[in-house]
Length: 288
Length: 279
Ligand SMILES: Nc1ncnc2c1ncn2[C@@H]1O[C@H](COP(=O)(O)OP(=O)(O)O)[C@@H](O)[C@H]1O
Ligand SMILES: [Mg+2]
Ligand SMILES: [Zn+2]
Figure 1: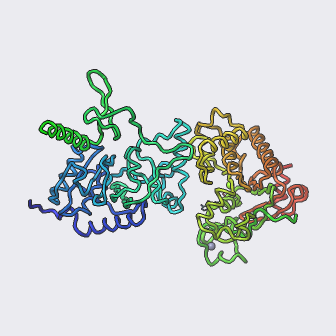
Figure 2: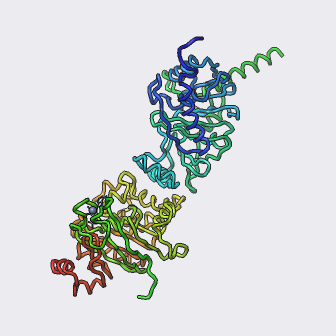
Figure 3: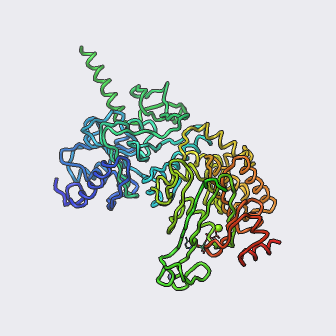
């Protein structure tokens, strides 16, 4: 395929600059590195931070997967995939284990990632202290002095008002025992997947012009008080109506006609994979 | 008094502005009130020295603009000072000039050894967080990680400052000025700091509310034996609370001594004026 674009949309200078920010982010786990976010042919707030990372690190040999809230088929995921594919010609996939780069919004895949993979997370709001301190120069000072009372205070307030912490997504984490970080709006269910992750995790905020990282095998702990331990969403007693899995993040599905509530995997490619395997097993059994 | 001071301040200077050749040298400096008429640099605190002894209330009185709040904010590390020293009588910090410590060390001192009640409650409280959360903030900053323990401390203190417990989860922005000041006091007391700074705690409150807040401060001081610096432009407040008093004018201390002595026999013309207007 012949295009007028540079490989991966950006000129080499831009890619180098973004890679330098990434290297710095890897060197200081959880620290938000500023970078000069570029104009992209998709609107800011639609994953331009993640996209810029992906475009800067991708090579011809890479295999790309893009998911949006667990789905490979959403308009947003599809348009990001299209842009990367037309400017690089790389292969795309829905299968988590086949991908070398996985760009995602709001989820970490259910299939555990390995050291040959990079997870790129799209971040709308990178500053975990923003709700308690509006001024950027102040939050910079707070990070530098490891003064995170504000983040703890927010959790305390939730417990006072609701009897428990209520951050549905983006529950703050302590990275490498030093920086408090917004993990992006992933459900609490996905926070533990960051801890000692084999895959490199890169996080990009386009609008806020920040890149940060969790290098492989880094400690990542969700903030929690001694007497209110961190808990992930519980789906106990529930299972996916399609593939039957019970230990994954499930979406509630409301039947329009009957109003009946059922559940299915939020990670659609995981669900498909499970169904395919089950089918294959059945076929093999029948012909055995 | 032969006791060792809890807090010693020496030659504290705070200026706003770079200064010019007309005002840089304190000797022969010609200021208009507290600023240089040539370059407009404000000399908000000039060569201020004093000791604060364990369990005493030290009063600082002076008209608006005399530098009282600036002094408090320098001591509480809110403002970077221009020059000067301070040491606190805490075993491992004894003799050290706290102003030369790292920001993290300053924060530690502030979180563990100091409490502050600001003139403006907006500065001391997060108006959109609950009253109990505001108290917990100070405890969290000092390392608190147990919700139940912090809640117990917060409730006890709110009761002590007469905030009904059924309102503890409300945001201070919905409280009256007097209640906001009392939440600030509870917050300042939460980490059992040995030193408390109180800046115009009763200014802007109704007379009856003023009296109850002053009573509260006296009671707390008697019960807990905390050292306090109480700042006010109102000599009546200082007379009620302070054992010893500094009088400030245009950024400098013009008189100091036992409060009773200052009231009976004021030496400087400015103090005389203050005292006579009180009678
Ligand atoms: N940030 C600032 N920039 C310039 N001047 C200031 C600043 N803060 C205070 N000042 C000046 O310092 C002097 C002392 O102010 P302040 O400490 O608030 O007095 P007080 O509390 O005794 O009323 C005043 O002249 C005031 O205008
Ligand atoms: Mg003042
Ligand atoms: Zn000057």
